[in-house]
Length: 129
Length: 370
Image (cartoon, rainbow over all chains, first blue to last red; front, side, top):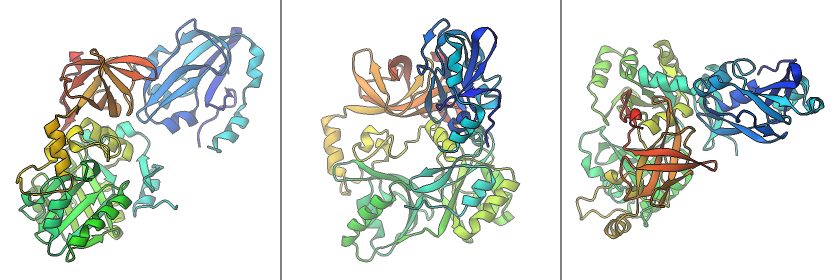
């Protein structure tokens, strides 16, 4: 079984969101997603200051097996990216909710977070795939 | 359709395999990390379950003549019992129905190993040619399992399970040569670019052999690692690098076509001769990505003169830590030419290289040239 931390929010497309202070949110892909994709070999991250709408394709995670798009879970401006992923994409496999975080957004509208799934709802959809 | 399982299915599950549907079979794609399995084969020894492959025994008077007509390579080149030959089986128009390995046992007995994904059409095709050879008997061998033990330590580790006498026989095997010891067919072949063996044995014995291999620290390796290993080794994969729309001459497999003796007619010969005479428009080359990303099959390759090619199979090379590919390109493309590959709408730089990329654990191309 994959790990689904209670304190995070989730999307159907397997991103996780950690709401932080000052209206910022950290985003990555779930343990379930990394396991499905297998060994990561290349991560393409959004540019700093890029304005994203919810649902925008903004990153690509590429495993030995396949490339997969990552979508912005909520609207916002990119304020940080995890530069370590350029040389160590395997951090996403090893620690998807920690060292394997992907980017941080300055959220436009914090209430959008309420539209995301909680851990229980996400766990329920994992099994459907 | 129910998916088929090899005798080792439960062994895979017990070893933590992620199982996928592969050509109608439930096969292990990896056992946790495809990259670790890849490195284990390059540096030590790994074992692949390839029991899904189609083993066909051919015997009877006329077997040799049939195979000489059926295959683009010439089985008459095989003179020592157990000797193997790689060949394509072609359509009349020179397209590849399948690629295979054929073993010579004697003039009236051969063993052919074909792909799993092409099983049904292969058997239809071969059976159709049998009409003119009433004395040849085809026997499919679903009762057999096949394990590929590959890597620099593969033969040593496998041999440690044998009697001294049997180990001596294995040690004497030349490349592309098989022997039979008790009920096991042991061949010094593989699909990884490393030394190693392919073992064909009764399905009922497979679990036991698998467990013994685990005891001597041979790592289970899945189809994922098998693909990156064969790509680094520059070995073509049926369905991607070749199919019925491409001939061996544009698939990097011209060397497998036996033109001599000229008197030997084989299916597809006429079409290949004509294609060769007219001049081939394309050829296979290797690509090394110099920009960032991963090359994948079907991506378009663009050259500075505007001409275009296509990647037939691409991936990340764990040994080179770069992305590599096989690509079918215009025949005037040269080693060292620069090109751009369309990766999801962006043009990323690559360089044309000679493959194999890796053999016997060593990089064969200079990744620093870029």
